[in-house]
Length: 135
Image (tube, rainbow, N blue to C red; front, side):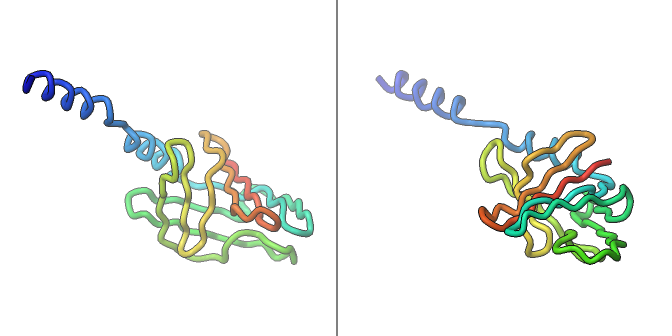
């Protein structure tokens, strides 16, 4: 009886483990490097502003968990991301498929991350913004 119990407990332990850490590590490495903010859309007013590549950049340094934002936009728009500066950032795994990017005190849901495109959602239903980045 003890042997059956121990085999059952061992089976539970083995099958209950997951590899969420691998997903997090992969996301960290894909995010690393420089991204250009190319579009901000959404908000209560229905904003849809495009920006030239290189005008607003977010440079992620995975080794130090820092993001350096360079915002050279001089056009008056409702929202163009964060001000220039260097901020701490972290990635928080909400679920196995949902990752939040927290920059300083600002939280964004990472809806898309490929080698060429990053889309961040402020997550505010009625008046949040969607930020689209490109490499």
